[in-house]
Image (cartoon, rainbow, N blue to C red):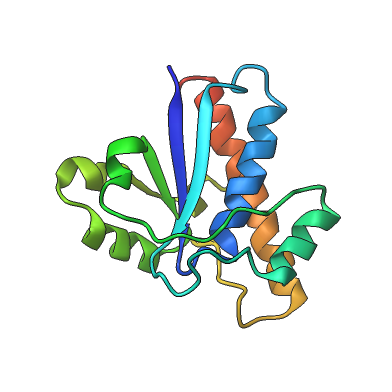
Length: 160
């Protein structure tokens, strides 16, 4: 059965488009998932609607072979009709998504991506690198790669 995943961060220009790009790459490399998973990203706010991801995140991703070229959009209540899972990058995003959710069914779809970390369990969120250095973008991408690989494994094993 096809699965629909939405990744959400504050503005949809750093973490969530990176998670979208990483997850698309991971899924494309797994014949058990390729064609069975659709992936998108969105932001809590509409400040960056229509913009490409932050150039620093695109550069970071390109250095690892990823294409982060989706356009920013704001999450909307109707997204809960389409997506099976809505992955937030941090606990503030989780709280904001709970405010967008219309009911308990919507709220059950909200997950924190950091809960799927396997190699970086000392992190409880994917920190926002926007006001940080290049190292902060690298760390965010390390965490996103780690969690996306685990999400893909669970999807392939039909445990998610």
